[in-house]
Image (cartoon, rainbow, N blue to C red; front, side, top):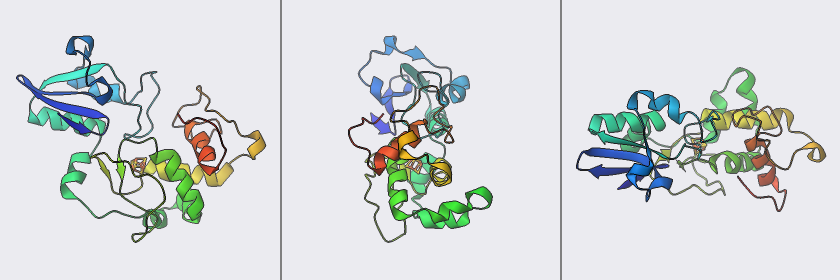
Length: 216
Ligand code: SF4
């Protein structure tokens, strides 16, 4: 059995089997068989039916199983959940730093180059702290951000577009502390970074130092 992000892969007599790692000990008969043909649409939403804004978000739906997979079908399913993850793991490219990614940005994203180190630390904690990937990049190539990297097998070698979008949004219009909600608004989609009640906006403010509020 092998973990891959929030997935677990097992070899069985009838081929490979894939399920959420939270369902590792669940009897197979208690899980819903998924059709590989609609798997892509299925994994884009969480257990509450909300769109998952980035592939690594730790909101993968539970309670399902894909079984009888040959090697090709297994690789296809892994790529559906975590695009290019097997290639990144196998090719082992050099990490790309946040500052390198920031200088590539154009248009409305150019301003992410202005993110301070402190803001980068807090955004990274807010976003990467809810991701199944192991963060291998830093602010610059030769330093280490003081943020937990995660310890999974699935490597992240450069800041993803969602992290860059979050960096832009907190620079654009973070509300005054007294107007900022303390808890995520369940009605705000996780991908709607423009709303101060968004899950990642709240996580960012908590990372900045608002005490005694639980993470989610
Ligand atoms: S940048 Fe962070 S959130 Fe994005 S894929 Fe990498 S570890 Fe996950």
